[in-house]
Image (cartoon, rainbow, N blue to C red; front, side):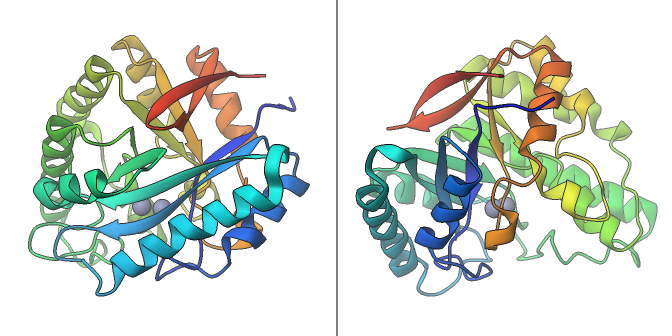
Length: 271
Ligand SMILES: [Zn+2]
Ligand SMILES: [Zn+2]
């Protein structure tokens, strides 16, 4: 099935240290794919992974989106966004979010309070017990982020699974179901969104983040808002996997998904 209401709410421009292409280049690609709009969500990690100069890059990102908005005028919608790695430091995240006028704030956990990065963690040399403890602390930091609640959508909830899959390790979510439930319930109760992140489809994980059962559980627990993002770090990744994400929304019983303007959800039909 082909969908028409396509919106990519998670795109990194060259203003993210790990991404490669300009806002204008990413936007042109999105338009050529027939997308209604995009949100640029460059990185700002607030825990120990904080990178020097990130404030300058965030300001540049905001400015680049304003330029693209002017250049594309009514042909596409743009969101000024940010992806905050809260990483155990909600105080710093709160200060950052309140310092600028964002349309959309993605909340993520990228690292722990000791500065360990979940992207590079040694999943293959860890024992299963160590990997279980690592996921336990990942979800605890995520719960703390949800309790803070200063974001709009929770990014890539099962992020460590993608990194572990690269090392041929399949992490088990079964022991963490209660933690996941509490996070989903917290999102639903506060009217926050859960993100479907399509980057897992482009990785050895080979599935959406989160998997369908988590999306269904979110719906069961009263979740209403879902955002869709490719997490593109280069131009060829813009909009990738969004059709599959729309299929997953359908299968989980969602008739609408959201994008954000001035921190408020705007609902689009899953068509
Ligand atoms: Zn992320
Ligand atoms: Zn991202």
